[in-house]
Image (cartoon, rainbow, N blue to C red; front, side, top):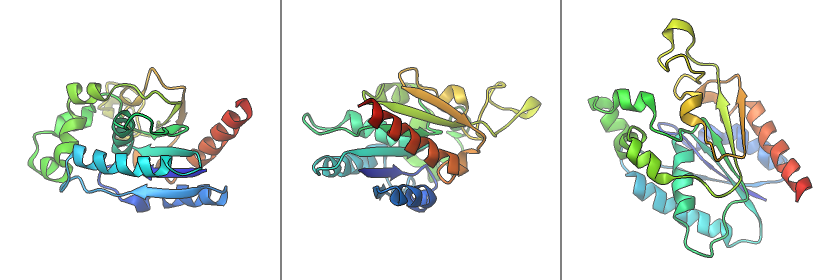
Length: 210
C-alpha cells in the first residue's frame, strides 16, 4: 500500500518524516507534496495535488492520504476535484485539520505579516464560505485531534478543547467515520507516535472488515 502525506501551513514535507518512517517500516511506499503558501494560491497547490493523486490511483496499489492542518483541507479539495473514473484513496486521515473557518485565521486575516506568509491559503482558512464550499469527503475519514492546547481563562476558543491552533469544534467532521482525541499540540501531531499507531490500527481493522 502507498501513503501520501501533505504537511500544514508554514511547515515542509520533513515535518512528516517520523510518521512516514514508521509507515515504511510497516511496508508502505510513502510520498509527500510540498508547497509554499507565500508563493502559491490554494487552487494552484490543489491542482498539483490532483495530478499526484491521479498518478497514485494509476498504480496497482491501494493508497491512503494523510493531511496535517491545511494539508487536510487541500486533500479534501483535491479529492473532490478528481476526474471521473479516478480511483480515490482508500482512507483519509486528518490531523488537526479545520473543517470550518478557523478562529485563529479569522483573527489574523487582516494582519500584514499573516497576509504575506499565509497568502491565499490563509484567507481561505478564514472564510466560512470558501471552507464550506469544499464540502464533505465521500471516503472513510478519521479525524485525529490534539487536545493539549489553551485551557482555563487563557483559552481563546471559548473554552473548547484545542491543540493550541485549532479547536476540536473547528476540526470535527460530522461526516467522518471516526474521531480520536490525543494529548498533543498542533505542530507535533505528525510526529506523535500515537498518530502512526492509530493509522496502522485503523487500516488493520478495515482490512479485517473487508
